[in-house]
Length: 422
Ligand code: HAM
Image (cartoon, rainbow, N blue to C red; front, side, top):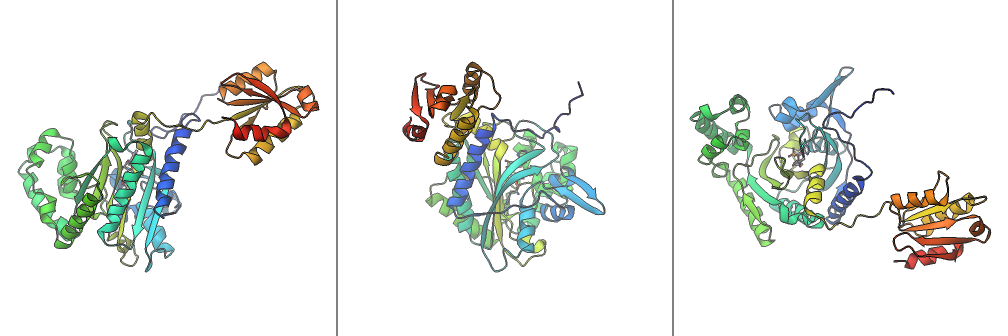
């Protein structure tokens, strides 16, 4: 036998048994986004590399070590590691946001060369939202309400919690950065080599450190919230008030800074303790400078993205009450002279008249026993049986595969029977 070829590490297949749950999660996401009036956009998976370097930031982990980049003749291209940069690029390119508000969403694969583990993959899927042209905190609150509604729909709301912070303006962050570096230099012996490098390039990311001893010291570090500019402070206070009034529970986490450079003011993450180390199911925030930074007219932006693999894992972990649709409701069984055509005609009629039912026609021959086995295997509720005598008399045997009863009906009456069948 020829040697088999395996999938790339960290890039997963979705099997026929897994796809119903994925479809269920995706349809909940789509329905909630549509119920808020958001419009779908679809961007290419490959973009020019400088887009990500400029939007996400050269010194972030994503750009400095996780991108899948390659040369296409003399152009450097990258498999998108996230959706915001491409969405902003498209919005500028097509004038979606010029003097205009836009509330957009997208769903699809993203690529990061990270070390794979449960909940962390090299190809993963995000559903993301980007809103342009709304500066006030009402829209930040709407995004949080939208995600909270989705968690309820998915049955995971008791297992996620909201972390919220404001990282202020660029200026405020610069001031804070100096204060933090000064503080960390007093504890330099606690920093790993990687953290020492971060201290120069991106010291705010050290706040996320997994090092327990350093985390304890960091509790006494200067707080970003104390360095906020007046405008960011007011924005954050208004957001918190609105969330309080809408009954959204959150924790202000002064160490939450996010891993991408484009943010300002509000940042947030929904986290869970049910998935081990990869507990962030959704993250986002404001990026009021990004559109201009990528060459557009100054336009505010705010958005988030959720990891669909993590949501699917969490739903599997905590929600046992999902009623997934069966893959096949009706299996059409036929054997003998002149039975193929009536079987096909009957199946097509059912698909026309009862499009909500899933009808499969047996296609691989064999006796009734073999065909009924197949019907059981695919999980059908009813088998419709056409043998030679049924074909001659325009009849069909309807067999309830769960209850076991069967009856003979005229083919013309099957639709009415199935309409009212339990
Ligand atoms: P992010 O925090 O990098 O933000 O990713 C958002 C979510 O994608 C994470 O919370 C996580 O659920 C999921 N995710 C990220 N990396 C992986 C991975 N390797 N494997 C599985 N899931 C993963 C962004 O991407 C921003 N673009 C979000 C945003 C939109 N901010 C404003 N607008």
